Length: 181
Image 1 (cartoon, rainbow, N blue to C red):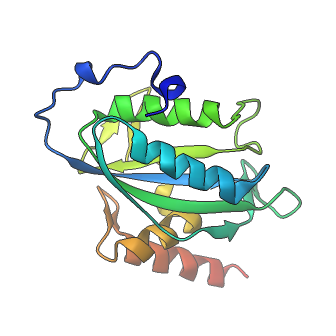
Image 2 (cartoon, rainbow, N blue to C red; image 1 turned 90 degrees about the vertical axis):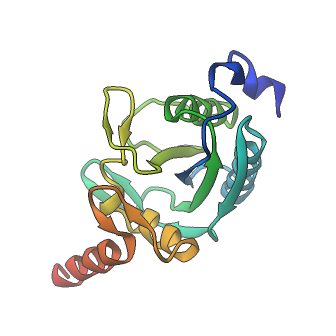
Image 3 (spheres, helix red, strand yellow; image 1 turned 120 degrees about the vertical axis):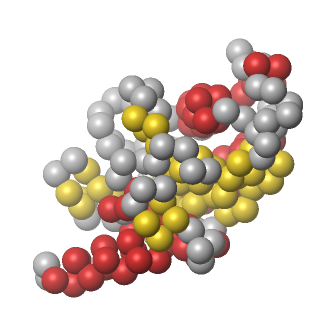
């Protein structure tokens, strides 16, 4: 484990007997060496305490999405989805994701701005949370092809708790895009 990444965190606050849970983490980058950053972030995920495995999709490129919609003038994103088997509590996993982003130069200057690395906790087992700090599943996951398609590629039976099967959500999303063009 990278000592700088683990600074300030203690695995002791998470009971070792917590059963493993599969979490879904979306990764994206549109600044710098995107592929190298995403691969390094996957290595950082694998090195976290109480993480027993990480399986990642292939990298896919997507247009940047801003609050007002797709922005073809912004640098394109590389995206992936990782399935993380972990015994970390969801709030601790989220804290580690933010630390990994910071380690890779993430700066939060504007909402949905360009970034060196973005890590979103999409789902954590069957947990549904509407907490101010952590909303699970991610509130916009079902609306994002760049999350659904890579996720489906590594888990054909994937479901978003409360929203449905990823394959059906992706088909509906793609169908709605065809209807608007």
